[in-house]
Image 1 (cartoon, rainbow, N blue to C red):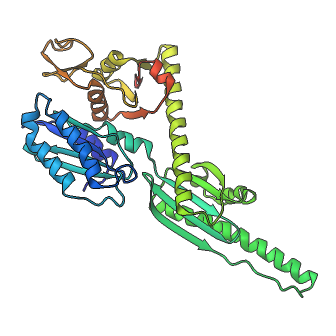
Image 2: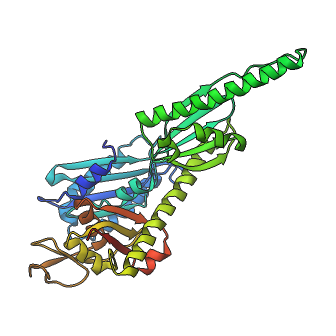
Image 3: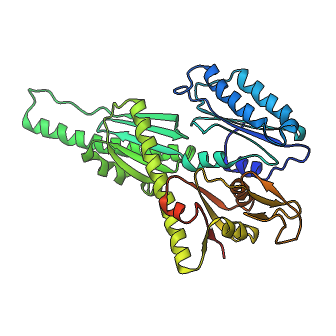
Length: 370
């Protein structure tokens, strides 16, 4: 089993099948949709039947068999909702990714691994922490790709006063309780910073009684304050399921906001005539000139296109390469080829979900280095 990281995806994007084709399988195995193994196996059978129509189906047969055997042999679904497999038997390539999020089922036969969905999983699921606190308790939850990977708890007992105590004693106990509560928030903030230093996270959500959230945020280290993306009124005894739903919902909002900001920057760059291009051919040309800093692609955007056998130049149309004059071959998805080229050039890639502004620009655009 391979851990999914940016470096792994970039390595796969640069991989070329030399001795034979490469098969990439994405399979939705979410237990909430496919309760029994035979349910997702039926979806696998549908994909395999479709693959038989591919021109290189015969060459890919050993990989199709290997992928099918793996899926049917059984695997741990306790934390797996999506499965990604890359197989190039002739080139000794075999990678399996158990994904904690579902993916749209797809089977691709190509000369390179199909990495777009892996990039989208990384792009859309940053690491979140949720710090939940009241005057005595604190709970910190760390989520990676929607899954809880760490949990920390802090408890500080508040002092109590007896009913027969005098007013001075009661005031003294109340002041001491306030001091203990303040110390508790400091401990909660320090605990969150320890987790950040050890495991790291991209964003922080604060939860608890509304009257405590400002005090809690003031106690955070500056590195954490700048990562706070939401403040939620949330009971200290909220269930893990509720906390996870809150974290995932905030995560989706943060990602959509980030995507919208990137598209707005692209739109402004195009409007000023400097620093941005949109449309498939314009983006492919910019990639060929190695000018792309960030590639933005609407989720699900696919087009046939052409790739030069000699210099690997990409084009939306044409059978002769405009760069070297060599012969070009038709590819099923030139957008996937563009993503792989961008990753190979160490460009940032943003898979944008349901953004009308990017769709109007042609569903693909690029912010340029120069």
